[in-house]
Image 1 (cartoon, rainbow, N blue to C red):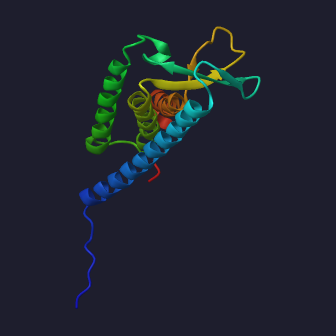
Image 2: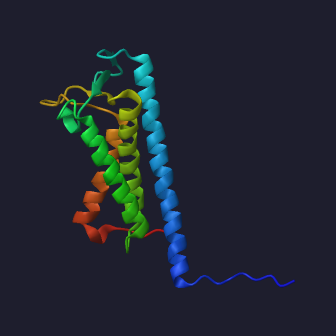
Length: 174
């Protein structure tokens, strides 16, 4: 019996690398979504709506519901932000899967963005609104309350901004 191993062509190697990157993207997105949903569940079940728990002098956990969008804008129209987020997440996945010359950091960064955005969409489906609870104290003119999903979106967006402004500083690990 002849045992042979086919030699991968260049396009197949690129496809294999893209599959590996998509797996990395998916694992990050699912981990972020899971952690964010655990946070929403714990706040929803342990902190009554409208109340605060002081975690430290800097951070309070204040359970509020955001029925709108970013920074609480357009209250009562959260479905618009949910629909837009779903469209954006779909476009990001298509971009990563079909785009040319996608950098490895894009898979990682977009994993955080998609996981955080997906968690906020899931909050809207499960609770009818986004569960916000991180209330940072002692910052002048700051009165916003946000959640872990929002933090994860920023964890993904800020490096993307940095790499866009300073493209020569990127490493290309595989």
